Each structure stands twice: as structure tokens, then as C-alpha cells.
Amino acid sequence: MIRWTPAKYKSLEALLREVERENLFLKNVRRSSPKNSSRVPYRLVQTENANFPIQWMCIEHGIARASYYRWLARMMPARMHSA
Image (tube, rainbow, N blue to C red):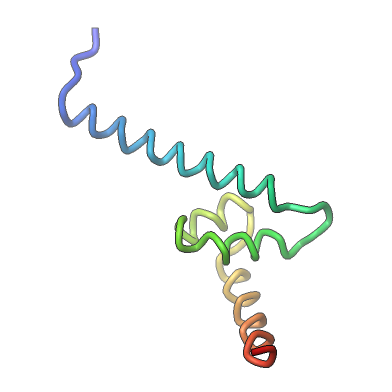
């Protein structure tokens, strides 16, 4: 029989929050990923960076964090010209 200590309960709550966060992220990935678009992971990381850690999202998408930041740097000048 498992003894439910406050520490064990707190640990399980943290794990549940992490799984719920991953589930939400994966739902967003499925919703916003058209076929054959290599930019989608980068855009999703950019739009979700307030909700999820960038490092974690890059790992989930299989992209290097450095390549995300290079993509972001290339996108910034385009935004400045369009404003």
C-alpha cells in the first residue's frame, strides 16, 4: 500500500501539471502544422514562448535552439521594415 505523504502528493501534482502542459503544446502543434512547411516549428516556438520554455519546445520539435534563434534574428529585420 502506498503511503501518501505531502511531499509525494506535491510531486505528483507537479508531474500532472507538466503532462497537461505537454498535452496542450502538442494540441497546438497538430492544429498549426500544415504539411511540408519547415517554418512551422519555429513559428510555433515563437508564438508559444510565453507559455512554454523555448528549450523544451525545441526539443519537442527536434530543432536546435541555436537554429531557432538564427531564424528569429532573420525574422526581426523583416518585421522592422514592415512596420
